[in-house]
Image 1 (cartoon, rainbow, N blue to C red):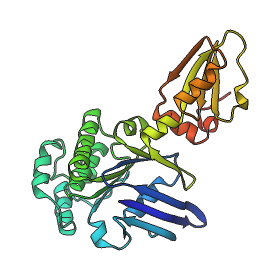
Image 2: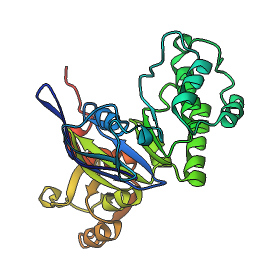
Image 3: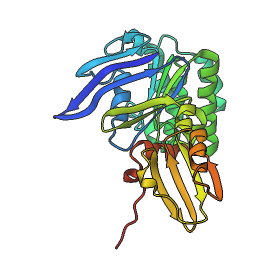
Amino acid sequence: MIETKGLVKSFDGFKALDGIELAVGKGSIYGLVGPNGAGKSTLIRHLAGIYRQDAGEVLVAGRPVYENTDVKSRIAYIPDDIYHFMQASTRDMMRFYRRIYPRFDMARYSALKDIFVSVDERQSIRRLSKGMQKQSAFWIAVCTNPDVILLDEPVDGLDPIMRRQIWSIIMADVAERGTTVLVSSHNLRELEDVCDHMGVMNKGQLMLQRSVSELQDNLTKVQLVFENAAPDFSAWPEALHHAQSGRIHTLILRCSQEEAKGRLKLLSPILLDTVPLTLEEIFIYELGGADYAVKDIIL
């Protein structure tokens, strides 16, 4: 549904995107993660048709996005920084969207009033809190009945109940309409609950993209205790991280749980236990292990 081929974009000599090869299937919820400055927002703006690429292709349903009004009418984009016309209210923006989105659903707009009850549709959006601005933007966007939803930090500033409500609406559209969702967020715990595929960006490149289950299967966290001295794990090419607290050794290994257990049992530990990895830990170690971990500061 969403595809980029060799996507390149530079700003004043700085290469923000360097040959991005992205593939997102129809009906998928794809999480895009990476450190600040990795190029996530720049990539999303290309998918929304805001930026024109220097090289490569940006396709939705096999068709170019940039300056293609028919394709863009099927895409809803909610950026991190919400922009609306000066003094426009939610009702004003609804009327504007009705003119440019041919599939805008007024019945859905009216039905969602009960969900976004705290948003006064007559009040200037600029006078709303950040959380209410996000609610207003989402309210209007989902009423366009898009085939693709692009979200950049979509629930930042929302309370837990509204976050859950918005994700409920998104996931219902995915299940019932086959909507394709690409979401960029630093809240990896939240993405872990909703995404079926993930892409990791760094320095303008898409380092990997896999299903969430594949990511979790590819790395294993193990805790061990030895009767005597532990072996030197620094010589293991699959060992991404080794830490010791008392007699407990914690390893992050690039292999499946079965492979890890099979090899480590040969070392005759008195304790061997595998621990589930969080998406945050996977993110850190896929980006380079200790170089991306939190460092102690000595004053």
